Length: 275
Length: 281
View 1 (tube, each protein chain N blue to C red):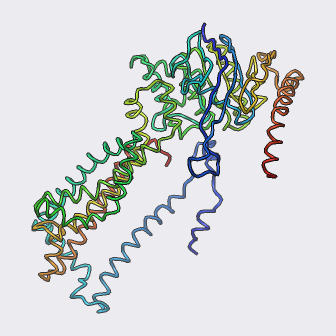
View 2 (tube, rainbow over the protein chains, first blue to last red; view 1 turned 90 degrees about the vertical axis):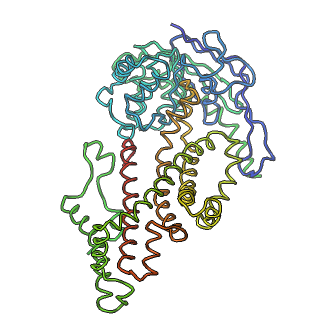
View 3 (tube, each protein chain N blue to C red; view 1 turned 180 degrees about the vertical axis):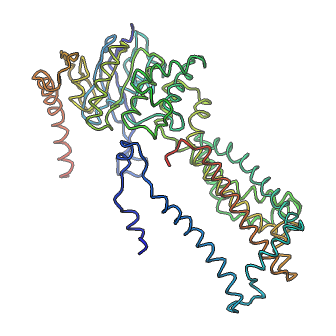
């Protein structure tokens, strides 16, 4: 099993304009990530948590190959990531299903892109739809599915071509709390069955603790990894892990870290308001 | 007491999630449906009745506004003796040729403009200039260049149809959900495949709106063009009937253009429905 990710000294910049500036003058360089180091081990679930705007999604774009870093290296299994590839599957927050294709058709679409033979596609798509528990909804169009179902199809689609790594960018951010918990449990289950390495980005601390074998906490401006926390929880038992004292401790630790990180930024904003 | 728009739109009803959870669809009772159809017909009946009664009672001059039943009789007469078809056929051929040509040019050209940023930036001001030039204003130019034969009529219809199709194709393709394009890129789809499998289907509803606007425009512009320079066709005939004082026949021809417009519009709507079953109702 492969799927080992290594980010070293990663820096990413963008040209930005101040929000109230109408013209191109006043463009400046925005440093999204600086000196970011992160390692994701084979077959683990790593969650990346941080305040909004800290560059979590920028990290995912780099891993997905949608952009290249200004400096540093982004490697998968020792090879530099040069662009998008089928060794990585991506699930975004917004539903990215093709609305004119059925649930099954959407998975077949990915399989077609991945170069699977026509005869293989349908059976394979069904297998993965089954994995996310949606066998009965194969012929439904996205607008006929609930938000949770749509994300399940998106996950099935990303897993269908068996990537080494599954990259997830706040995939459950738009779902209601109950659906989110159920999908988190399902994801753990899927991860156990497939052994895929998962990088899961979220701003929800509980989600990060529940899912992550390790939780990487990011700080903002510029984004870098502040701390990586090993989470040792028994998620296999049927009891409510989220209500254990250990869970609360992890949660509180990360909460304090994020609070600490947010404080200076807030002070700056207040100064700006006064001025 | 008929309910006002406010009452109608704010009425408490099953919300979409309730409906989904129960696996049902909200909908009025069947009798309500029948009444809705009845009301729709009622509007048409009132219009026809006014057309019949106003000239008869002398409120308007029956010499200039023929009562409805005389118009219908004239229309039937023209239909049975083949006169109507003689005028409708050339109009149909011109409209279809111009309309078809506009689709053939507009969709690929629009796609090209939307797909490449440079082309889009160069083409947009030019398109704005042409779009804001009334098609009929340059009809004399077309007649000058293409003569008063079929070509000038087909060209003017094509010109009038082109812009709604072109502009809707541009905006449809240019505004494809960026998440869908990201998904395509992540899956390693080639630019051509991304266009064919993602951008084009996503833009189809918008393109179709343009096609429908163009369909309506094709009939309107053609009739006007035929009035100016033609020796056959519905527009020509309306003008001819008016100058030769064939008033009932004139109205019959006008009514025919209405029917033609309705047929084009509803035909296209039906076609659109067939191609967009996946859309939210």
